[in-house]
Image 1 (cartoon, one colour):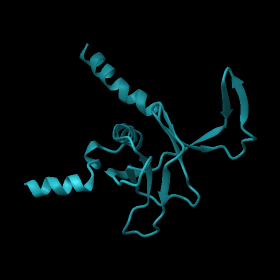
Image 2 (cartoon, helix red, strand yellow):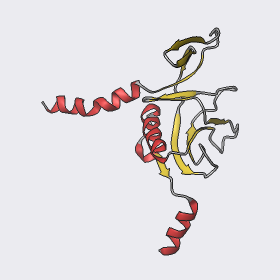
Image 3 (cartoon, helix red, strand yellow):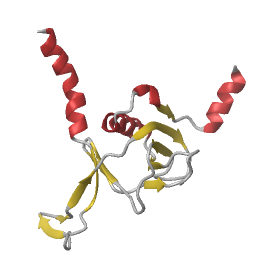
Length: 159
């Protein structure tokens, strides 16, 4: 019975990891398929799942760059991504195709990384959790500091 309960407890983690992956638009894809259903136009673009990169840590912070860019998640990669690598993500129920950037530093002192941006702090927290599961990064290597810098400075002054 205990084994059954443990399996049930781990099921959301297993299911969540299966629902998340990196992808790119398929290179051999023809034009997007278009169809109208009721009042909606649907575009179907074939995708290709790609290998999940190896990462060492995740850091989320407030960057305050305006609408859609208030917060950023930076994922530090262990290997230099290939030239032209621009992944998109399916994280749980969300499909992320915008607000992604890749930094290829080409310097052994600094890790290459990819970043996601959003203005919703709860979304950032959810993405960090999903990315941690997908990239197999332990919670101890995931930092989330979403307070604005002014608030942080005010907090340290009060101490």
